[in-house]
Length: 232
Image 1 (cartoon, rainbow, N blue to C red):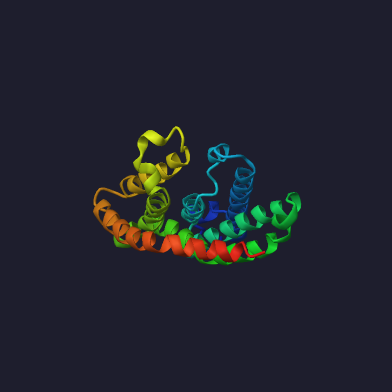
Image 2 (cartoon, helix red, strand yellow):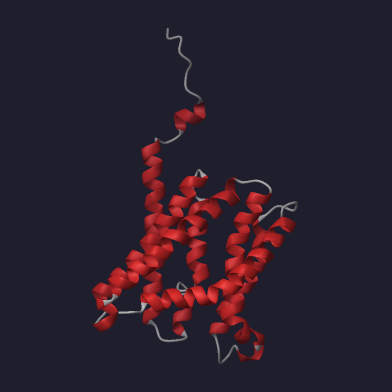
């Protein structure tokens, strides 16, 4: 009879590391690919039909990276999943433009993909890591993880949609304002929905601080990136 201890039940039932890695990163690739395809399809629809697929909003891309990160088993793999997801989204989006587009849109797809790929290299790990920190962190780190996403939604909704959202009676002639209003509402609710009772105050404090920074930066940074990506 062997004297070596038998493996713990959980360890015996756990799938191999390679299987978990392939499954997790495969999910990131598929999730990012679906996002990129949805964003491309949204661009093909006339306004306001494109709003039915709001996949071109900054908050949606960041939210997907956050969700992918939250699905990981560790914080580092969460950051990696967010990175893989956004890179996959950029690749699919511009691959569809290169294959199905025409004129300058198709010719410049590789250039634009490079610029937005660099953005994904920065935003993907940050948002994926934030999602993983929300899932596995405690106290302030967990509150900050939620605040990173919530503040981005609030900043986009307020900066780009603020003047349009104020006129609530104009939604019938400006349906795009509904999308920005939804971002503001969701951003404001996230700390309440994702954090425990004792963490919510920290979550809202961090969200308020980050939202101010994001609101100042989002306009100039977005304009700079789009300007670089559209030079073709």
